[in-house]
Image 1 (cartoon, rainbow, N blue to C red):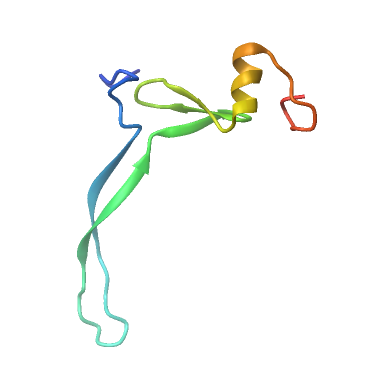
Image 2 (image 1 turned 30 degrees about the vertical axis):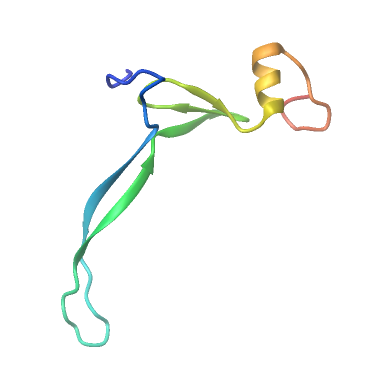
Length: 82
């Protein structure tokens, strides 16, 4: 599922407001408030790669990982890319 985003327009994350219930430990007063919460839509799919759950974009943690998965170029000494 791509959630209606293209890889060119997807922000790959979102910031939304959440209500945080809190009590002042000293006075017992309610100090609940709204906070911004940032959330990434990227998840790890295997070693050295991640994928956006909204648009399907595949990303790499390094240039060596990109070369391995896209061109088959091995990188001796880098676990998983040898």
